[in-house]
Image (cartoon, rainbow, N blue to C red; front, side, top):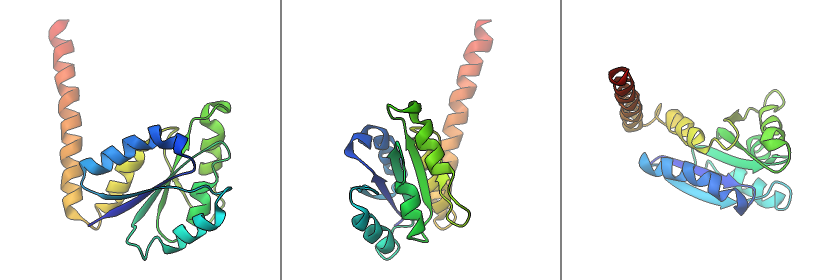
Length: 162
């Protein structure tokens, strides 16, 4: 069964991360959810990252605000792909978080979604996992087909109302 770890730097990030949890549930992807700080619990972060692959984690989603070092710290210590979610903070409306995550040095990539983009982070994780798990590819296709149908319905209502 596919497994994704969702790690947030603070429990205050949970309202944003919750959408990723719900999205992974929709696709029947096993989740491990943790609060680990790159700055306040660096040894826990290192231990988690180094053991992620052995514990069955195939993708890590890491949410962080302000300095937002958590995704990069985890990525530096594991070969498991890391997707960063920049959290909108009181500083710079999350641009500081976005830039901290997206500007990783060459050799240690972190895939990065938009500010507070936890649903897209989960969908990107599902897309990565669908290369190994064909059933996820089918569920992802159904998900996208439903989105397209909703847009077509809205289009038909607009066209019919003009």
